[in-house]
Length: 212
Image 1: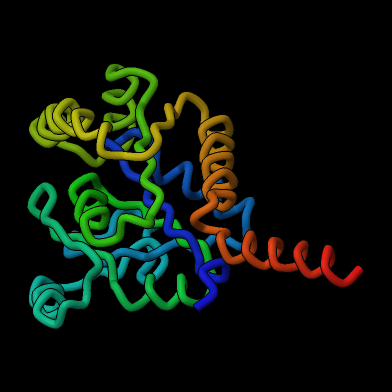
Image 2: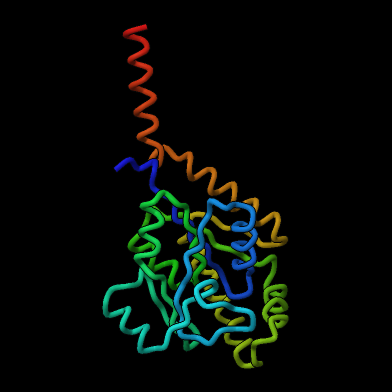
């Protein structure tokens, strides 16, 4: 297979409230050639969330059946709810040459990296821990106890940043999204991704020298 035609998997994760979802939304609105991998979850939908657009909302029984059938690229339990990335959807899009954004939690991202090291792993950071706390509070969906749980987890999750390829501070969405765009552009120019193009160019150059 010509590796140049294969899409790039861009894995974006970070602490809850860092704004990874907002960054992904900005990228998808600007670049119609980017595709979002829709995850499955057992948690209840939040206000405004749509089945098949934000998540596939599954019962625990259905989710477990998918695990048994090896249907997830990764799956994890976070804050009492299960999340997973449908494997077949991602693999098909990459084979079709589509660049895929995967927005998942840190546990999931690290599992993907174990099995799919050709992915591009980007860690989204808040400008400060105080700003992170305020962002979570503004959601209005957290109890005092769950807020403290998420905030403590954020401190622990930042320790995993060294396992990622890139880190982007989400101070403003526009700037953060532009940094991710630059990362994607750079990745698509990597020699190991365009080796077929390089080989074709080299063979073309040799042919010109011999026959022109």
